[in-house]
Image (cartoon, rainbow over all chains, first blue to last red; front, side):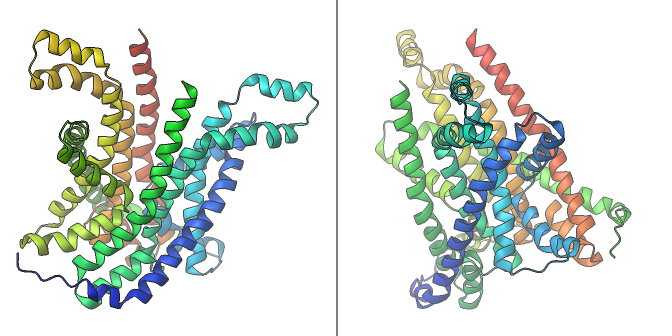
Length: 222
Length: 222
């Protein structure tokens, strides 16, 4: 192979890549804010006694979990403006699409850990005279959130990776800037390698933290 | 007021079916190759040689820590430059998704290999079985059985991720759908139908995961 590498060409264009990374991080944080709160709400609704509430929410969750994220994003960008006659900024649209996707996945994580909250604790809550809202706030929420932290972190970092998909609908995130740069400089190997390393540098530490939390939990359980 | 005309999608059913066929073909090939790769990687990660462990560990972490889209772009644009050969779209797609499937399924196999008791390996030594026989006749069947539910959900993930190849111009279901939607200017109908096609395939599979899980738990409990 006679290809001379020129990584310097990537570093010369540090500015746009940095801007792209900031957009990616913004997307990730905002989507996680939606995912963590809406996800919990969905988890409560999906366990509702009334089928009228349960069925549509289940359908929503399963739909987001069983279709490719890329079609959700493309659908969102093309169809929401037509259907609801709203035109939002592309980053806002990206945040909403990723946030809804994450909410569906987080809802499953919350549901599993809510169901793992022992029945007796809820009975104790009734015995103490707490109303349903207080029972959720003081008994279910703290335990369920703590138990689902590893999965929530994994999902959160998953959405950081999935956020690269918005580049397809021309949101100027890290992936988009990388793609543009690769075309402009004719340096795909260097550019895509650096982009991959940047994503990796953010994901890897988080996945190590998840591994540590899981090991600690196993050690505590045994 | 807008009006919807879902009948328009029917006119393109042949194109969509062709796209679906590409998606399914790609997914199936990558599942088979990826599972083999994943099993070998899981063995390498548990091996005595530090080099094997190191290389396989870095590989798996890297592929799990970067967006699949970046991996795809890397393989589509950089691999041909490095190898100096022209790769067809299909070949690049297969390579990219197989490498990804290998990484995620190796984690699944690793967890299930751990659950094969130490005593069984000792028994193999006592019986004088060769490492090959030990791996194929004792470890593999048990590991596969325990890994089956997670492996199946890995397959669903792969099926969904396969939609990404549309971003590099492979004519899969997503690509065909986007093309039709752009040409007919009817994104709502076309994209919704495409999403439903993905859903109709992925949803029963996720249900199957639950069923398989319960069956295997029952079998292992006996």
